[in-house]
Every structure is written in structure tokens, then in C-alpha cells.
Length: 272
Image (cartoon, rainbow, N blue to C red; front, side, top):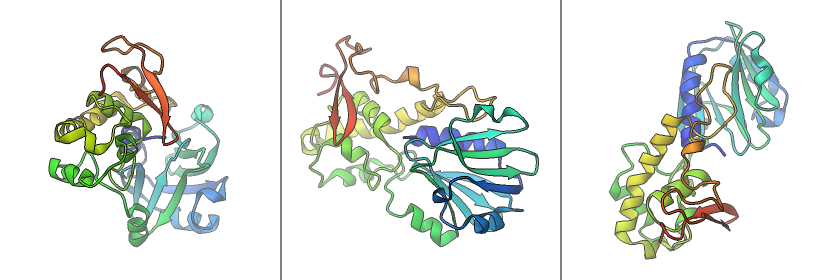
């Protein structure tokens, strides 16, 4: 599932390709992917201009000039693709919603089987994003706020890192990475970690995420034919999806197991 680095990579490329452009067509191949009738979505979007694209956690928000918003969440398999002319052959999946622009470009929302694209007003936007926790790349992600999140927690640390009500935007891949960087076993209980371990964790979370953003995230499928960034994070993963391979720090095999139903990776030598 795309996490903060992947959605930031999309946001950067969306700003380059769709902001300031006028919508001239909407096609919906899977009505379940949207929250309004197809003709209502088409009527609301045609003639609109996208002024900005922002991110909150794993959500992307398209700001429309008329005061409405498009909110999308890729969930597990969703992908975005932007094409012009005849370069639609590189689609990363089945297009479920397509938005056309006055310059001939098209924005493809692909494989939204679990994901969605919702049209909302300002109150609807608040409802879509309600209940999300701290943004780890925001100024609000202070040591004090981080400590408060875990002050009364007793469970294993990795599932808590993935709880969107606590920290918004971390998922399975980067929770593995930050725990490795902080030298903490994923199944370790919060009371066993102690203030020093939590401090290390708080320090590495923004660093790991920013490095992954700079590398282009781990989604391999191209956003557009000219995209040469997406997927650049994959060779930089220290532990995620590397079960059985030698640890790049100590050389011992990386372990893998399921924790709360998610594949979890660890090094018993480097993590405690």
C-alpha cells in the first residue's frame, strides 16, 4: 500500500502535470470507485480548474477552483498515471476513473478496487480526513507529542506505528525500516522500549521518510512515460521485503514473520 513517500512522489508529479489545467471530460469505468452518480461527478468537474494538490497521510486532495475537492486514497493496489496523445500504453492497471484536460492530457486512476475518488465540499473533506493522527513530517511531530501518543500504550510497537489514528501515513514498509534504524524489535512492547528507544524512534521516522521521498518511493510503475523516479527507493530498503537475505549491517539472515497479519522483517542481531 502506498505510504507517505509514494504519495508525496505522486503529489510532486501531479503539481507538475495537472495544476492550472481545466477539466474537459470525465469517464467512470467503475462507479463503485466514486461517491456520487457518474453524471453528477461529470457535471461538477467539467470546466473546473485544479488549483493545487495536497497530501494528508495517505490521501491526496485535489483543490478545485470552484471550492470543491477530489479526495483519493490508493489503498492496496491503486495507481495513478498521466498521459498525453498516444502514450496511454503504459497504464499501470485497469483505469477506473479518467479525467481529461483541455490540453489533451488525461489523468488515470487505476485499480481502485479498494481505493476511491470522492467529490466533497469543505465539510466533506473534514469528514474524510477526520481521526487521522500526527503527520510525521509536520512541525507538530515533536518529541512531546510523540511521547504523549505512547504514554499509556502497552502493545507491540510495529502495529501501533501503523495505526493511522496515532501516526498518519506510516504503513508496513516504512514501519519495518524505522524500527530497524532505531534498533528496536517490531514485536517489542512499548513499556519495554523505554524513553531512549522511543527517542531514537522519533528521530529516525522523519529521516527515513524524507530519504524515501528523495529516492522516489517504492512504487515501480511509472506515473508517466517521462517518469524516471518512481521505485527508486527499492534498492535502498535495509530490511523491508528482504527476508532470508543477509543483513547489510551484520551479515546475519534477516528474519520474517507475520505480526498482526502483516509481514514483518527484523534482524535479531541489530535489533533488540
